[in-house]
Image (cartoon, rainbow, N blue to C red; front, side):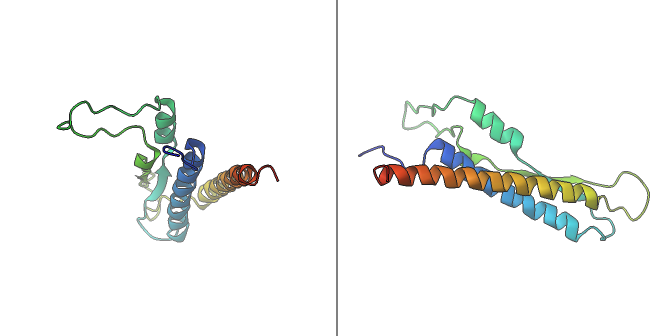
Length: 137
């Protein structure tokens, strides 16, 4: 049974997506919590472009031909990290806080919907695995 792996690439992708969406939720919650803090710069958590870039690359891992070579990182989902980007207030009005609560609520709702959809896909994949393990019963 060498090489047998219960967690396939799609399940790994779903897991990574859940992890990144949870991090985004924390950033959005921080923005909402600091909506009245003077000088606070709103933040976004960006990861979609990096995730898409990894998915578009071939799934082949680089081959090390000599033991003295540095190990090369493949296009592993585990290597994907999100980036927190600050958006300072450039309007020059008010207290310098760049949080727009309405925009944050929209981002919060969108992230929650995508998180729940990913949960449903993950649950469905695990149900299919359970079905297969139980010989179709």
